[in-house]
Image 1 (spheres, rainbow, N blue to C red):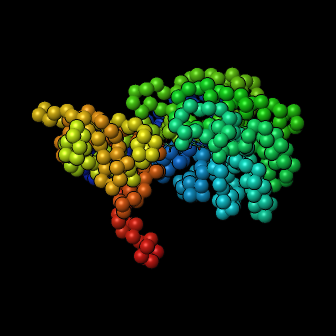
Image 2: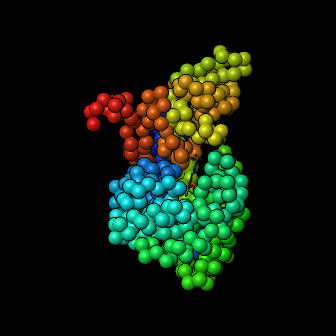
Image 3: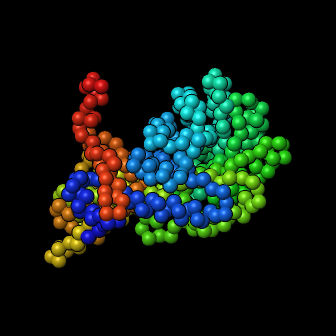
Length: 410
Ligand code: LLP
């Protein structure tokens, strides 16, 4: 029987119901430490990318480890503040920061704005002046390197909407340095997600270093380089990004410069520390089409969107050993949502019976955060396991939770 740390997944499903996301605290802690170790001896701050899994229970784990946070909205900022994290440990990324979001971040005194355009720089300066603050800034560089990943999650190419081209960076920094409402802190990039080779990251870093050196010559001192996130994980036994190589390359590139390194990993820290538990509702062997077997489970694309959106692969495994009498067959694991694109997995060889409990693996990142109420389905519960204990860190959504917003009940 499958366990998360010392807790049986079946016990969690029996107590909390399905679908449910289950996370392992020990996994998060181990991954955080692995990354710190790989970057040594650089002076590194890990700013956990909240967007990967923004559950308050998960954020608390990282805050306790001493992490900073990478946020992309006022909502994420409020999450981080609500767990008592230090605003100075927050970097604010994203191409579309609104006036309200900028004001909130300024009033809370966050660590750094990762600025994505000249227009945004001007807006931040104007708001800071109005609020009598000085805004700490970093310019996000678009280094135009091919991160070799899924096009939806590739962000460092010229044709992507993110960041400022290398050729415009120096001018923008000069503008920032000349503005009393702005304080130049860093330089950043994020070239994409689920990267499996170090080459593109190292190439991006060398572009950043060139700019840092050029700025230094014109009297602008950069305190930190933020390499973003993007570290790829294994979804089905494939090789992960080589962390030690990444650490080595960054140490070589940064060298003796007196500069801090920031990283914004999301997936690397949480993806393989989470599973989605789901039960088989119905089996439809060869009922719709010849040679097509459907297992209809109680989780759907609204709970875990990655397979439908990116054709992402998640391993699916039975939580308990199937009875000897159940034969293995090739199944499409599909949800109850009324779309043919509603699937969690295609063509998996499994011995399935109605009522079986399945675990969809590697669901700790970009799982719950991308869930929706499509088909008026309530979002799943979330559970955090710590040793032999587990805690419900978000209760299952009820239909009333959804209707309340439409019934004028506040
Ligand atoms: N920093 C910035 C500025 C980002 O845009 C992202 C992710 C990260 C850090 C964290 O990247 P990570 O370390 O997790 O790769 N929904 C997609 C992934 C979208 C990533 C968006 N940006 C998925 O399910 O694969």
